[in-house]
Image (cartoon, rainbow, N blue to C red):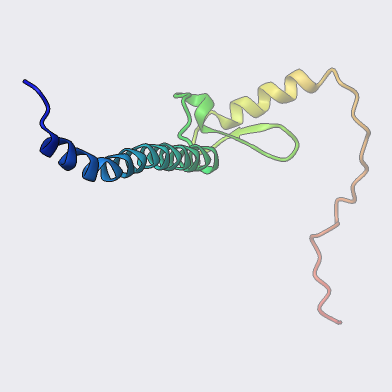
Length: 112
């Protein structure tokens, strides 16, 4: 099957459109890749800023830490026992002796 001159005329008239279409397809792929990277970056930032559920289950997950680094258990009956254990463990450590007035905070001055 040979190519006729009339066929060449039709092909040559369409060559510029074919080249433009191929350029648009390549450009579109680059744009899609860039958009995918932006979406991935946003998801990553959202994961970093979100609060994640604790993976620990049990009594350790219910421990609340105060500013001093000591833990107390919330809504547990065993918190008194834990405090007594901590007090027994810290009994060997030397603590500065505090002198307190037994009447301090018990009397109200209304003569003011």
